[in-house]
Image: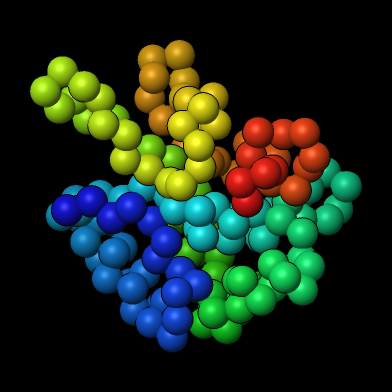
Length: 145
């Protein structure tokens, strides 16, 4: 089974959905790729170089992220654990099917995703040290967050 992200911010079952996905993925019974909702949660939690956050804490963004924040309080151990798991997820996979590669991943555009692949074409993971340009103008990811 492959989970294709968007575990969070979809209603009152956020914590349960995340618990089910992790309970299957961590022992290897299933796999998952990062969805745009989890990507946005990483940006909400990650501080930028100027002391702000990579995802602006505007009223609009807070509203979109409210369900996750209500179930995983911002500075709690559960919140930090969820963000750590999101960061460990690949952004996409490609599977060879009948001579074609099928991309499974987030709703971000393929060109943007491809820029996040390493030299072997393997998806990088969103490690804590990597800059995530979400709210910065003129960056590939800013228009999709």
